[in-house]
Length: 230
Length: 236
Image (cartoon, each protein chain N blue to C red):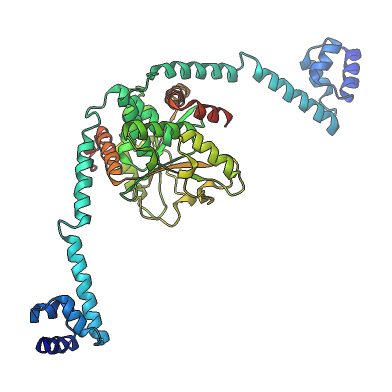
């Protein structure tokens, strides 16, 4: 029997050392030590220390370049970058038109018949739509109106300046800032520090044109094939 | 003086006729008749009759093919019909990819790193997304999952049948329907009889690829924006 080692192990355990630490000190397998000391209760403080060590070790493992987290992040990045190159870097008129129409179909306002309205919180999407309105729809600069929608506790002036820069619409052509808090926002209050922006153009002809373009794209879905009206 | 006409006009007005009716009967100008009879008060009943006449006249005018309402409806329809043909009639693979990426950018769940989630109430959009998934990403149909989101008082079975037909995803590949009423829907309870439909695919590669495509589209916006706009974005 290894009575000497057993005694030493129990002493160390009373001091709050982990099985691994004890095993290293007395050069015995962890499995033996586990049996010798498992009846010894640890104090809350000792348990807290061991748990902290465990957390640190887990964090270290997760940060290792070969951890699943990092391996998958690299795989995702790889696919993202190769996909990035699959889209033409040069945005031709045809591409701009199809993309703008798709975005309007998804995010634009379909109610009414006279107004072209497009809202979003993503500055890239706003900038791309402005390109669509300028280069494809040929909306004259004076016809653009902008509208900032922001939660009342946030900085309205900063937001107005930001969206004017992004859209290229002068703030003199902005409508009054809206402060409503949508019910759909649940309790999120700071996720959009610059709020959302709406591009407004009052033009029945343009609105009809965009509606027609959307109809053209809707046809690609071939809804008639399943008996739903196309 | 035309005292005879004045007399006649005043008699007719007392009976409640409109200025136009009187002018027609006595062959005088409406403006003269108006001057002769304007001091005569009408009874409530007479006023009622004239008002309903007026309403009828307005409705008739609005329905006339040359009314501005109809004229604009025709103009709009012409523009719409012409515009329909201004987008490519056949959907090339390149365009399908752009459309899919643009729609996902707008309506998809971009926060996830591993799940493709696209929800909509528009059947055409759902079908186009399925086309994008099968033709561009070549996803096998058994990997598609669907989910109906519908208000609890509506016909859930009917909605599942409908969306299965639209999407081509068999009902056995649907998750349990979500019967919640979103707070955003305000008081609307019947605008979407079939609810909305969600396409769900667990696929890290698909998620990453779509992000790459969207990033490429974002790049168009940045590369085109004025230098000012770009720096504004960097600050934000």
